[in-house]
Image (tube, rainbow, N blue to C red; front, side):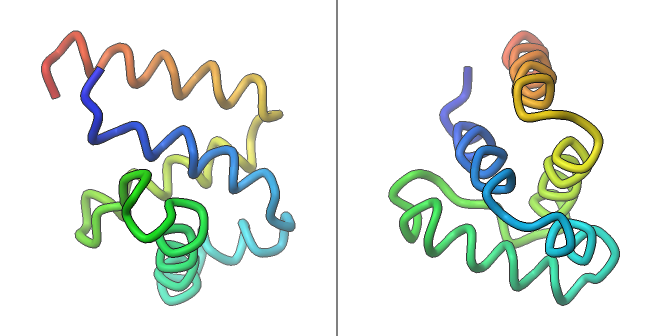
Length: 94
């Protein structure tokens, strides 16, 4: 697996520690999502030590995917779905 996606596991775990209202707001509001991204990068990803959510549209799309997992599934199921996605990325060389 490519190390550049390891941050996704940390972020998904961190999203389960946040209130549902914050997650829903981040899904529907670009500025709330940007603020959450900055907070996750600073606190949960230790200012880049544990990776970073890319600051571009691709990073925003990945974060939205993690937020969707957080809203739709319990943590165990969401983690399993993320692992499947990461495994498919690794096989395809992305």
